[in-house]
Image (cartoon, rainbow, N blue to C red; front, side, top):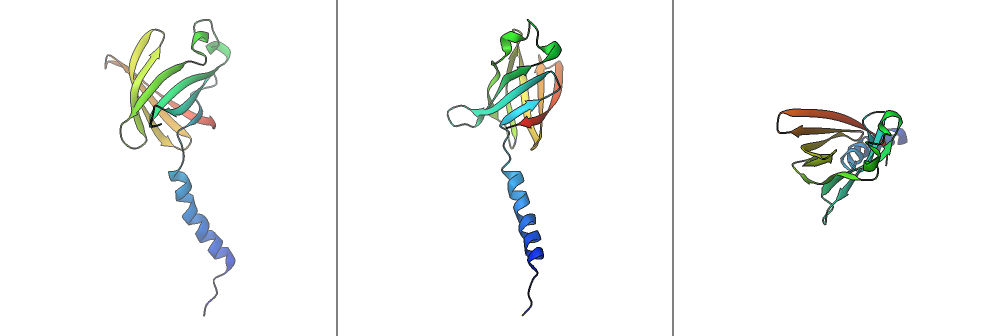
Length: 131
C-alpha cells in the first residue's frame, strides 16, 4: 500500500476549496471608483435578489455642496437580476435618471454602465475596498 504525503493531501484540499470560495463571493460590500467617493452595495428587496447602491463617502472635490445631499442616499434602488452576476435598474442622480447595468466581474471588480436616452453612456469600474 502506498502512503500519500500529508503535504500532497493538503495541496489537493486547497485546490478543491479555492473554486468554492470564488463561487460564494458576494457583490455586497464597500466599493470605490476613485479616491473621491465610496459606495455601499447591498442586496435588497423582499427576496434580497435586487441590488442597491448607496453613497457611503465623499472626499476632496467630491465633498461639495452639490454632492453632499446624496451622502447616505440610495442612488440605485432595487436593480433587478438580469443573468448571472448582472443587474439592471435606474440610477437617479442630480435630478436625472439613467438606465444602468451592474456587472459583477470578479470578487474585487464591478462595472456600472449608465445610459441616458440610449445615446450618452458611461462605464465606471469599481474596486472592492471593504465588506
